[in-house]
Length: 320
Image (cartoon, rainbow, N blue to C red; front, side, top):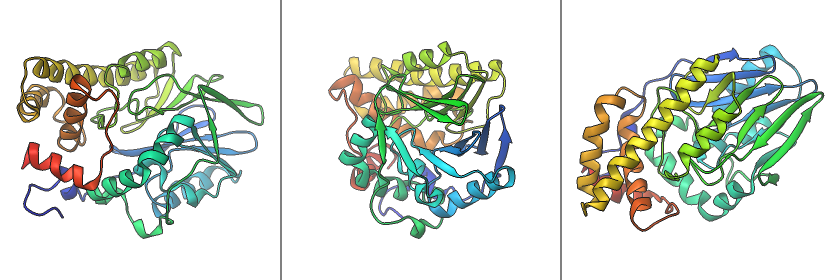
């Protein structure tokens, strides 16, 4: 635990969440856990694809167990929608033929993977159950792409698409064009606060519009319940877009007025709490989100690397 300052909101979050494993279209399944990180699964004719792995191999074992209840096809592909440790460190459990990510995600792992891993585990211990099962080092993609990649699982077409920056520079979605189903990673959340500590606030709304243009009928968000109707998908996209826009409007106005980060944080928290305070991990995300947004609105177009030390310093400044 952190000494001499208020602990991260998430360090006190110890409550186990109930897992749901549900089919959302002919070939797609959602592994969701009441606002904890989701995993999306595609079961093709001859193989299985998993998007986002859970945070540790021990946690991934539960995903594999549920997959095995519905198919014995090999898990051939793991897709990393982005580089965050909570999404990728379970990859080894699947023993896939290929771990696929965008080249931008690969570059971020090179640049900041080790720092991010230490930072995330320190922030939110419950999400890294049995962290000792994570093999040493980073989770490295074995294959990368830029823009678009198409996989065929037998006759099932699966597209990996970069539709723009948002949650990170490297965001990838998994799209099943034949059944209009999307696995969004953390570009879309539902009744859960978007973590935007590594985000591009100015780009994110357009990226969400690019997702909407695909007209998904079903969507597995990064956190929150699976969205299984076009209306629910639209609601998920709108909620995420509004949150990002509300943070950016408040923070950029404060920065323009010459207010310091602490003041801007308090103002923004007070403005957003009534509308979003009931969303999962609101108190955890807001210091990181406002800090990154303030950076973007002032002098850092690209996200700075979060280290365990920087986490503590930021938390002390805003919440201490």
